[in-house]
Image (tube, rainbow, N blue to C red; front, side, top):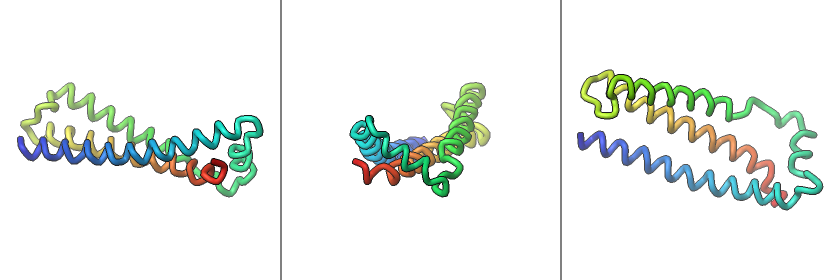
Length: 121
């Protein structure tokens, strides 16, 4: 049980640190969009360069977010929030894993927009 609490603490610590990056990138993006709300320069420069357009990271974030939700639902259905069997442990920790992957892809998506908009801020 001690290992479970330690693992939860590590995962929540990772999520907290990643949240700091999200806040920084999001602030720069919002500043650029607010500063150029009349001329729309950041968005125009993005859409005029089709070679920079690729599969957005939020698609992957949505997939992993869905899988994290499925794991949380399976935890609820098999009482995995207090794990005692191997199946309950696997669904419990895979939910954490999918949540971390979701956050990583959200950060990559926000970083993608940050790199495009930081010169306008």
